[in-house]
Length: 321
Image (cartoon, rainbow, N blue to C red; front, side):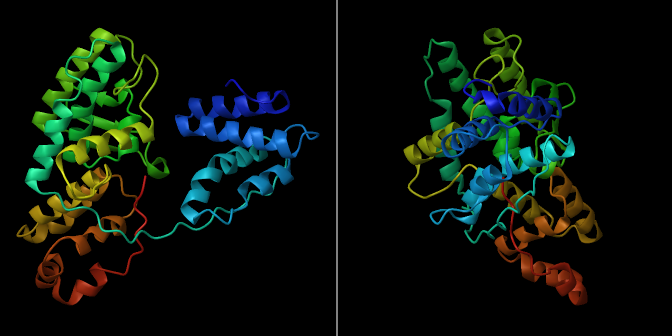
């Protein structure tokens, strides 16, 4: 990776190769490693490699930072310290990341009109683009956001999908780059499968040897900010309410829970299937959505009676990317 200080370049690049070979690389790591390297060069110009002082200084929470912002900034360096320790390159005390703050915001409840407006804007974006980049964008966003809406996949998971992860013959997706490295699989609806097949065929004409399914080039993907910005652009063009791309995942969970009413003894089995398809490590993460479904508490109480309180424990919500 270019732009690294010479005294740490070999060490950091070996860490990068390890993460990529393990399938754990995230493009956000690159910018965070550069910032950490610049910090070390500025404050510790006479120290080569990585020292405890550098790790402690970088991982110390700033007064202006929230716990979530600090966690996002330092996790790459925490993983670097663990990597160096495991190989006896250095011996560092790995700092603890601040505890994640439970989310209190309520996901947006989409109306059909809002969805129609949003996808209309997606479908009419840059239709007459001539550049490779512009043509890719005009084809990508209608498919990308429909995949989020129809499958409950996390935006980061969709961004990092490789061509090899998507089975367009059987309509399945293998999610390898997931929260907590929790690999899982999802099945595509027939209409979504057809759309992705058409998209794949069209993009292959532009990038025949691409590595990533939703690509900006042969081996590059859209970054998180770009996806978020385009969602806001399409959403604000047709709607006045506030929503984010992650709300598609919440909507998917809630819509599926609503369909479980009246399933009787199959309820628990179907809930477990929903939890697995969404990549939740624990069923408790899926249970959070009970509180967002109108009338679901009363429905569950009717079906479970005495077991109601056991089924709905108090759960701190930490569902995130």
